[in-house]
Length: 167
Image (tube, rainbow, N blue to C red; front, side, top):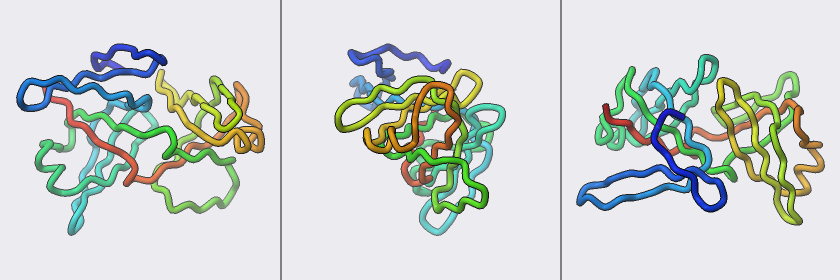
């Protein structure tokens, strides 16, 4: 990610943010995907915002219209998508699979850290981008998660926080 960041205690990226008043806010979110806004489709209450995060992946986020305006989001602008690891579901690629989640991204398992209750899975989604996913340990075993395995990551457009990048 080209955005300035530091690394926190557990290796999680910490992104500095200076809100009005000059105080500094840092985020612990591990899934921060920077990209270019490709399209904004306004609805009655919210807008669907497309964010190109690499040459083959556009993430769709659902953002309130008032937030789109407040952030100054527009096609061609830069933004960051924040996705909580527990909001991502891993699934096998099954022909004819139908999901209600808008975002479906293929990736390769890079690493799996399994504990007694949950497992952390890191996926390579291409072009140096990764997604961290939290699943139950039972699910990690059932999906046979191990390095090199191909799998799909799915998440809802409403589970994404969009941050505008100035400049």
